[in-house]
Length: 263
Length: 262
Image (tube, rainbow over all chains, first blue to last red):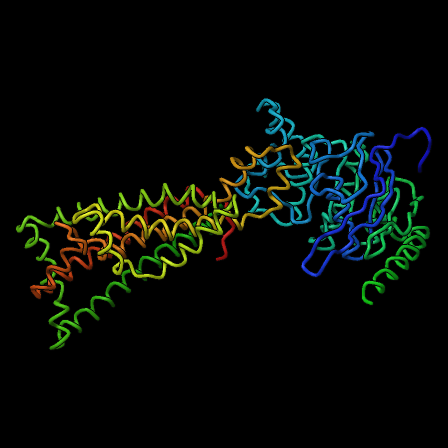
């Protein structure tokens, strides 16, 4: 994947992160190095507590590494920035804003003229299949619909990199599969760099070009697996021989880490 | 909305009104029974004696004056309480030292009945409406500042993070996230504050007020006039109910977006 003609979009350089807790310090990340290419779709899998969310938060600029740094286009990341959009597991929609007002939030911050902002917002609301729900409040939507709004909101702000923190983790199996397909379609159209965290191995393989397997406590990259299944991928891909092979391989690695955590 | 759900809603609305009527009738029956008792009858004369008390007090030229005086104390005390509680609550949420110093004071004073320190206020501020307003101010301030502070503290941090990654600065976050997210708590604070204002009215008007519902109840109790006394007590309850209704309407307008457990 790391072809020479491709540009490194995100560089994670020897990132180390520790937390000062009540029972002393915990090392969340211990020397993580990773190059993510332009337009690449990366999935990170690992047992809970392996620091994958910490890594995402560092890239987002919501957390600072204790040492080491993350770079976007060669520039060190300091604080949040609109070029890095985030989709959270808990949707994080503003409950007092309607769907369209939620999607317009990032544009509002950019001081985009209202008419233009509305046009852009409508486009993305339609893209996530929520046409007709523009004026609904989040409380009137199902979990899947809420996450669609959150994805539209992230896209509308036009980031270069999309960071997704277990975005489908709280959804039921059917909705999850549906949103995976939709996300893949959008990615193929918009070709934004995606950094996607999940604990679902199937999800990681169906989406990613490379799957990063993280080891637990302290978190570090254990292995990187290239997913050599061509796009477009569909749900049928899941019965592919190659898919099953990769799944067994990745599962095995993740399971070992899971056992480590249990110890 | 489909026709059927509209119908269902209407049906539910009628049912609620019927229930209210039943509740009212039951209260009247209990009241009537109390008025029959030999001992209880002295304290609880029935409607036909209580209602004319409005006229009696009006003839004495105090009825409207009492309402006016009390409402002025409640409005002024509550108003002062609200405009001071709001910034203090935000300061407490923002700067830990402010919270660490002020919160213990509030928790300490809150458990002392207002009646206990009312005389102290009279010593400083003299008799009349001034100490009454200050007393209501203190009580409403304590209830409201703590409630609003808790509300700000409980704002979902993911919302702030989500706003930040979408390009919001500190000012945007205050105006577009903290403020709207705090509105439901401010309304709860107003509800509790008004209730605190009404319940401290009696203590407030024990400070040598010239008129007022609380002061009148006290003075009527000295002359054992139970009918007008009961009338004033019921009046206090009615005022409370009206205020609650007004807040309900405001709440529905401002926080319709909120998810409710029903």
